Image (cartoon, rainbow, N blue to C red; front, side):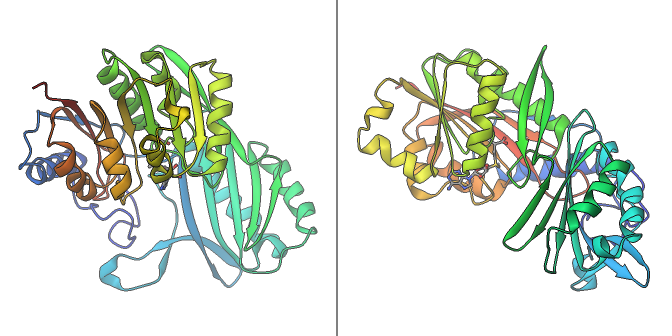
Length: 367
Ligand SMILES: C[S@@+](CC[C@H](N)C(=O)[O-])C[C@H]1O[C@@H](n2cnc3c(N)ncnc32)[C@H](O)[C@@H]1O
């Protein structure tokens, strides 16, 4: 990948390194980090090294009559942002619309004044949600300007945000389609809720989890399920699935996603992982009809809190998707006491950055 902002922009810190070299370095780092565990061979799962991000956030830089997208500077250059001409890590739908959009916004002082940030979310059909975030009072007058903007960009649904206020033109979600193995799954993705940033790697992660759970016996519990990204395709490998997530809008999307994909054996609950973990201790009737043998977790960077780790440690089989190898390593110290690690994968969701997404499958060691 080539980018004019390489060496200045704080996002692509591995800009000097060819992509193959990045993959080699990151996988060597992971092998070394997890050396103390008895790890199977690391599977390296990667995709395109440009136009891979389906969502992105840019600050806006105003200079005279011009406005530019901006990214934070490299750490070495101190705080602040730098203007950028384009960003080749975003997918084509976002890339192609970025400059025509800012040019139109520049022409309208009401849309341009105190515009602080623009966020993009795309789907594989090249539809977009674009959120304009302002640092000024917003009133209903802006609706007329957005209506005119929408005539130029019919593929975009716009959202206007200012602390405490939000205007939606016309909807705040996209329907994504992912081909997983041979089947197409549809997902409602709501703006400002979590969705996997790299569409291609997400598809490969789901296929990896499907492959690694196809022979498991018993039912599945899932914590941190988001919009049902893993839950919906995975439900075909299990008799019953119960999945939980703290964000109510994500649970609303997840419920919708089970319906549009005709998955009938899933129950979703909107609650924190720790709250859900307490249900088992209390012998809650909610869990009575489940054969609790398998758990899938995909927590945020902080990994598992103490209560959730204790809960997860009660299952025979654990599938752990992690966006932070440090907290994964901490959690594995507990989870490997009675289990062996059956599979270990590195999913390169974030080329040109030092971030690493991993998958680990653990199974109970029989006495
Ligand atoms: C890395 S995302 C994974 C989401 C989903 N598995 C996916 O693939 O899209 C982590 C999710 O955990 C949720 N979350 C964060 N803290 C939580 C908590 N304490 N309990 C339950 N869910 C939480 C977030 O809202 C987010 O949807």
